[in-house]
Every structure is written in C-alpha cells, then in structure tokens.
Length: 141
Image 1 (cartoon, rainbow, N blue to C red):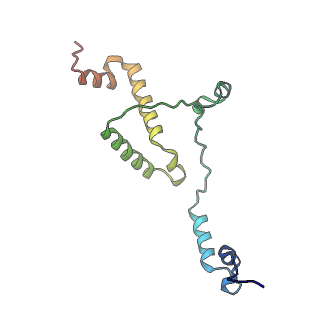
Image 2 (image 1 turned 180 degrees about the vertical axis):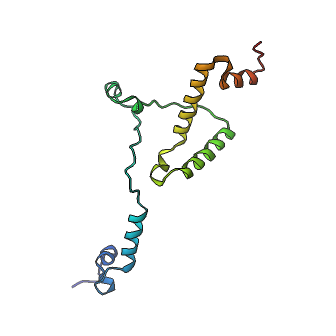
Image 3 (image 1 turned 45 degrees about the vertical axis):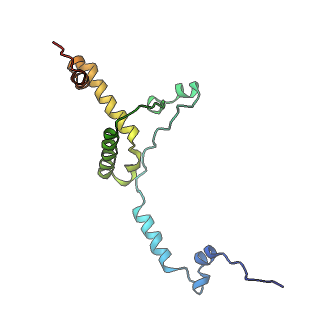
C-alpha cells in the first residue's frame, strides 16, 4: 500500500503527452521548428584553444595560430570601456555563428599586431612611437 502522493515525472508527461490525453504538447513542435530555424546552418571554424598550459611538445606540433600564451596587463578604465563597446559593435556586424568567437582578447591581439607591424615598418614615425613621444613630450628633432 502506498502512502502519500505518487511521484510523477513532469518532463516525462510533457515529452510523452500523457498530461494532454496522449498527444505531445503542440507548442513543442513549434519550439523545435524555431530552434532549427535559428540554429547556425554553416559550421563555424573552431576557435584556437588556449595551449598556454600544454606541454612544450604539443605546442611544437600545433600550428602557430593555436600556440597561445596567457599574459596580463593593466589598462585604464576608459580603454576597457572602449574595448567593451568595440566588442559589442563588432559582434553586431557578424553572423550569429561567429559572434561569440570575437573576444576582447582577440581584438587586443589584432590591435597589437597592427601597431607592431606599423612600428616595424615606420619606426619613430609609427603611430605607436608618435603617441609615446607625445605623451612624454619628447621632441624627436
């Protein structure tokens, strides 16, 4: 003899439709269609994984875009705010499948690559050098 209420699985009732006379809930079909409609259709390229803690052998075997090293820097509050705004703005311009692949770290890496390429090409006339010289009020003449 059982005492107390019997335990039922709500999820089982929803999925089998036993709570609605044996028919699955009509909303589930619509929900499934919406999920399929808004799921990314094209496979997205994998994001290079962080291998900063990987073995040196693994780092040698992986292609260069997978070799990453964790690094920390202090940034001013205004730069962090601008970076967050830029991240949101860039994500809005990308297709759904690629939006989450753009991170603040990736944007910082792209920006540094551009600045360093400019510095390597133009030296003291580069954007980076001019900004530093201006900040420290150094006259390069």
